[in-house]
Each structure stands twice: as structure tokens, then as C-alpha cells.
Image 1 (cartoon, protein in one colour):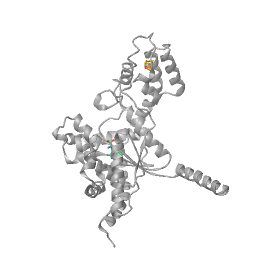
Image 2: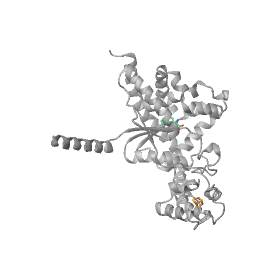
Image 3: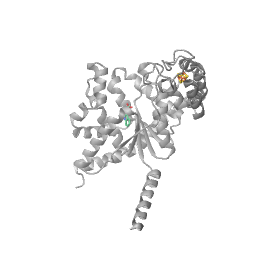
Image 4: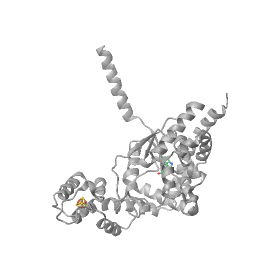
Length: 352
Ligand code: TRP
Ligand code: SF4
């Protein structure tokens, strides 16, 4: 009996260890909406880097078809934005040798799988999608948004994920409903046509939420972001005018970092000793917000400068990004084609 328990315990330990060393297939993507900001860097890209460093099989896609769902009127910007975004990825350390970096529109299998998955996707599942409902409200039911592509956005995203049989999908919190939809569709597919797809799991970044200069969530559309490509002096200016704890009216009033939008940057850029220093200094009014911001700049600026100089290196190499994306598409396609063969075999009962 005791022996059994011990072997069971050993098994459990072994399983845990295996889970740690197991290599997963990872897929994630971003819509090319233009310059990336520090929020993207800290909450998404650094999460991707962890998977890449741990040698998981990573696919990172530029969701240029998804961008068309809302930006079709400015479609000419999408290609340019895609290239700019990939430069930021590369500058931040996403490596074309270790990861597959590609444009969604370069791999037609995404649209092919999307069509098939659409057949088993109930309309209700998409109507209930919170991001769809929110967007309708936010854009005031603008008719230009009421296109089929926007409605079926999560189905295309599901195809992105399932095409590479991704097991883990690192995303921001706002994307969780889409991953749930992907799981639902994958489950239904497997049930009807046979087991083809692993059920993808979302992986949320451990990085704390970063607020913008006005105290709202950092976002390009709120005009409150610090961009990775931004001029260093401009960044300094932005930090110096960043919103702080509004309850701290004067230098003599104690503040509360938990209420301070600027402090969210300390959380991701400053080492623990500096964070401790500004935290207690703020609470006891021993330091002012200007001092606190200077500590932040000391930590943040070198990191951004490093990224910018890497980006300059990349820009000096003619056609580098084009080549990276071409090679990425080739590698993605190999995988995607194999999955599509399997899908068609399952759906149409080929070779039965
Ligand atoms: N919808 C995601 C976003 O807006 C981008 C995306 C497209 C994505 N396809 C994906 C993310 C697949 C994860 C997996 O950020
Ligand atoms: Fe925010 Fe720092 Fe000012 Fe405190 S001292 S309110 S943490 S900027």
C-alpha cells in the first residue's frame, strides 16, 4: 500500500517535471495597427520571448487579414504597418531562427480552414462574443463595422490557432473570449469529424497592467502611450507630464503607488530595490513625483535605447524583413498544408 502511494507520488512528480520540460506548440499574433508601445512590449512580447527562450515551437503571425476587418478603408497602410511591427518584434528579440514569423495573408490555408470551421460555428456563439458586443457599442453601431468579416473575426482567429495545432496561446486578457470560442469550435470539430485538434489553452501574461499617461489603459487610440520607436526626449517629456496619484496634491502630501498610473511603469521597468525606494518614499512623502520619475527614466531609457539601436541595425539591412517573412511563410505553409490534408481527410472521409 505504502509502496503504491510512493510510486503514485513519484509518478506525479514525474508528470510535473515532464510538464515543465515538455515542448509545446505556441501560436500568437497581433493586428498590425502601427507602432507598438511599452504596454505591448511588457505584456505580450516579453511573454512570447519566454516561450522562445524555453525552446517551444513558436509561431508568431501578423494578423493582416484581421486588420482588414476594421481598417479596410485604409488598407494601403496595412502592409507598411505590418513591416513596422515586425521590426519592433525583431528589435525586442523575437528571432527568425528560433520562431516562425509570418503574415497571415501569405498562408492561404488560414482562409481555407476558416471556411470549413465556419460551417460548424453557430451564429449564437459569435453573437455572444463580448468583444463583438463591446465594439458595436463603442463604435456606436457604425454601419461600416457591420461586415461579415468582423462578425466572423473569432473564427478566423480559431483557424490561425488550429492550423498549427497550437496548445498554448499567449494573449492579453481581452482575447480570452476568442480563445474560448476557439476551444468550443475545436471540440465540436473533433466530436464530429474525429480527433484532429488539441484544445488550445490561453496563457495570460504575468505582467501587471500598464496604464497610460492619462490614467486609462495604455492604448494608441487613447493617445496616452509611450511608443518603442519614440524619440527619447519625447519619452522623457511624456514621463514628466504623466499622471500620478491625484490624491497627492502637493509635494508634502503622502501618496499611494497603488493609485498611481506612473507607478505601473515602475512595476515593469524598475528593479525591486528601486521600486521599494520609491514606494516608501512616496508613502512617507520623502520623495516627490519628479524624483520618482527620474528613477523610472534611469531604468526605462537604456532599455528603450537598446531596442532602438537594434531596430536601426535591422533597418540598415535591405530586404531583411521581407526575407524573414518569406522564410516564415514557407515554414508556416509546410505545417499548415499538413494540417489541411488531415482536416480534409477527416471531413470528407478521403481514403475511407
Ligand atoms: N485578435 C488578436 C488581437 O487583436 C490578434 C490575433 C489574430 C491572434 N490571430 C490570433 C492572437 C491568434 C492569438 C492567436 O490581438
Ligand atoms: Fe506616483 Fe511616484 Fe508620485 Fe508616488 S511619488 S504618486 S508613485 S509618481
